[in-house]
Image (cartoon, rainbow over all chains, first blue to last red; front, side, top):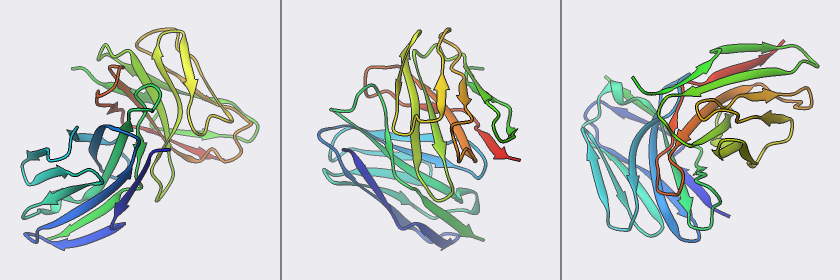
Length: 112
Length: 113
């Protein structure tokens, strides 16, 4: 059974204070690891897909990295508009269909 | 613009009533999904469909039903058998076959009167 654990549950930063969110996973063969951003009362917005250990992807102040057991979402010099819940999900090789297993998310608050 | 639409944004259910949530996509995706999100919890898969006229149960299918008569549409019915239906419901779609990203709609919040 695929499992995803995200930490911390909540993170409060000052504007400009860089940090990282963690996503630890257990899958029987990783097909893909996905990061989403979710604003309150809205659907998740796709950020990144990572496929293999060592891979990195960047978008504005966000950079996602992947190892064989975990992924990090690095936030550099965050702004208040980066405040949201960040969700991590995995798709395993033995998972039927294209279904994803999600973590519970990290709620990020960036204060001005 | 391509995307996924869900309606209504808010839905109220009376006890013993069945209600249907709409999900439509114009992304030409074959696969569609329904998730339930409760406060402080991750998304849990209710049903998914990889092709028209075919669908599979997810992890929490009890008390729900779906149909997939058209590629663009995947409605979810919350039946009276679902005793705790209050939640945020999210529809998603993707190109099936693995590695493909799931794109989400704006969600429907279901509340019980």
